Image (cartoon, rainbow, N blue to C red; front, side, top):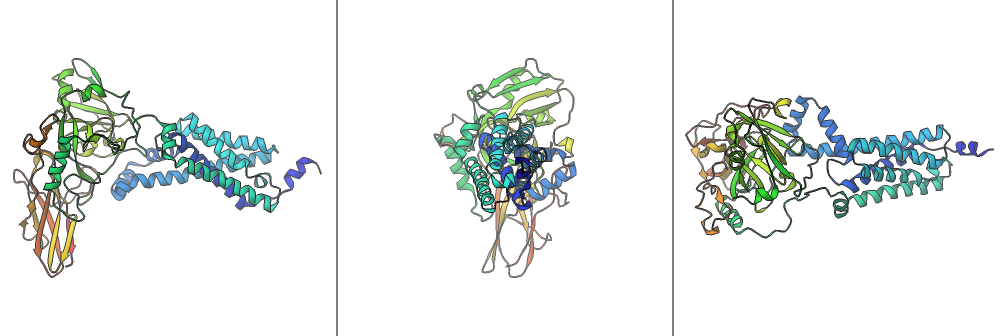
Length: 518
C-alpha cells in the first residue's frame, strides 16, 4: 500500500473534527485579543459592528430600549460566539480541502492559518493581530496529530485533542493577561478614570458637599452617581491618544482653529455638576446620572474662531465617526470636559475630551470629540438618520427607585430632573393619582465653580447648579396595598405631564408608579 493510500485509510470521527475546529476558532479569537485587547481592532468587535450596521433601525431601537445597558455586553458575547464559529468553520474547510487535494499535513496546517489570518485581517484591519491569531489557530490543528491525519489511533487522537485544547487554553490565558494585551496593543488612552492622581482639594470639597446633601435611599444613587450609565454606538470604545489628539473648529467661522489637549487644559477651567440622560431612558429607567465635570466653556473657542452671524447649527464629530447636529444656541453654554469627579476623563466617557450641552438629551453630548463644525443650514445627525429625534431639551421626569416598608411606615424616593428648567418640587400620590402631597427635596448642588476657587468657598462661589437633578423622599403610613405615583414640578410651576410616550423616537414621557404592598 503506498503512502497516499495509507494516509487516506484512517477514519476521523465527526466529534473529533468538530472539537479541533472549535479549539482552533477559540485560539484565533483569543490570539487576536492578545495583540489588540478590547478595542475596535479586535475581530469580535469587527463582527459586532457589522451586525449593528446590518440591523434594521426598528430592531436597533428595540434593542436599546429593551436591553438597556446590557445590550452592548450581549452583543459582544454573541459576536464572540460568531467569531469562534467563523474561524472554526475556516479550520474545518481548510482541512477538508487539504485531504481532498491529498496534501501533506504541514501544507494543510499552513492553509488553515492562512485562511484564518486573512479573515481576521478583513474583520480587524490589524495585520499583527491577524497573523498571531492565524498562527494560534494553525497550531491547534497542527498539534492535533492523529486527529488531523486520520490515523484511527485512538490514544494518539486523544493526545492530539489534548494538545489542541492546550494551545487554545494557552491563547485564552495569555489574552486574559491585561497588562500584556495593553503593552502589545497600546494605541492610546486606555484609562478608566481610576488611576492614581493627586486629589484636587476643590473637587474633593464639591464631592463632599454632594454627599452631605444626598438622601440615604436604598436603590437610589446619591447626588453624584456611584455607577454612571454608558451608551454609545460602539461595541468597543475607541482608544484616542491624548498626546496626538486635537480639536478643530471649522465651517462658518472667520478663522478655523485647532487646539491640542495641552492648550485646552491651559485655559481657565471650571467644575460643573451636570446630569446626563439618555434619550432611550424609560420613565423609571436608570440611564440618567450626575457627576462633577471639569473643563472649559465652549464659548471661549467659538469667540476665538469668530462664528459668522448667518450660522444656525453645529455638527459635533468624534473619533469613532459619530456625529450629531443641533442648534448653535444650545452649544454656546456648553462645556468641553476633560475631567470627571476629580480624575482624568475615563475612556468610556469620551477621553480625552467630550462635550456637555446643558439640558439636552445625552446623544448630543458627544464623546471623543474631534471637531466642532459650524453650519449655515440644518443637517442630519447619526441617530436622526436611524429614526431617533433626541437633539432637543430633555423631558422632565421624577424617578421612583426607592421603596421600603417597615411596621406600617412606607418610605419612597428617587431623583427628579428637568434639564435647565430646574425642579422646584416633587409631588407624591399614594392613591393612584387622585390626591398629591409634596415630598422633601435635597438642596441644590453648587453651580459652576472656577477651578482656581478656594475650596472653602465651594458651596457659595457658583450659586446653584443649573443642569443637575435633585433627590426626593417621602414617608407616610399605610396598611393596605396601594399605587404610588410621582411627578416633578419645574421651577416655573409646570407640572410633569401624565401622557405616556415610549423612549423611541423623542424620549419617554409619563409618570413613574409602583404598587406598594406594606
